[in-house]
Length: 72
Image (cartoon, rainbow, N blue to C red; front, top):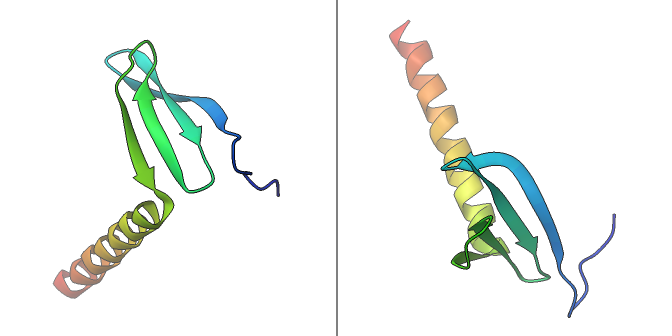
């Protein structure tokens, strides 16, 4: 796997759309930026924050599945 080095970024256009425009993701060594193609406004997210959000989403999903099994 290729590591992101300092001073370099990796930019990708996703297939996801926001108001019929693709979402652009820029990867940096310590954070990522998300923006809508054709705009200058971006949102920066630390990798640690992104991991924490993913863990919370997974925990909520597991809890919902557990509650659904109990209700059945």
